[in-house]
Length: 202
Image (cartoon, rainbow, N blue to C red):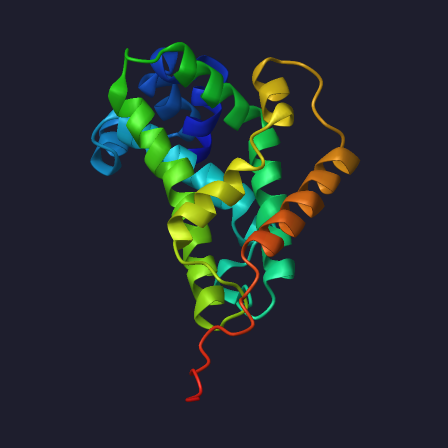
């Protein structure tokens, strides 16, 4: 169902996507779909979550459960590569375009996309940064803000070009972007040498 839904939403956008077509493509009835997903917006959110996990999860190169808090350079590189791959995927680009083009027409679809995509990813990165802060590999007073800042570094010209239907950055350009953003984050969140030390009495 989720694969069929992903194809339908990608090809036709949220508004024009047909539950009947999704049911026919997946070989189940509409009743079965609605027993799992009570609304089209809920099915849309599930399809986005499935797509995010497929590209940004372990299959896409980010093993969240085993990212080592002691090695933030390696972990942030994995996260950066996964996020770039997700932002460059044609279906995610189309979803962005269709939702931005229909702002205000279907708030539920926009909210579900936000919850399944940006909100979920930012929370996952924040959990990693909090873990790295806890072992003093990084200094991150506000993990959620730091996660938002880190992911936002990837939404520059390359992302704008994708949304406008222009030529996408090359793999070499994206890899250079990942390296530069990771280096910037490591400098910004570098642990303070004296952090956690007790002041000695004079």
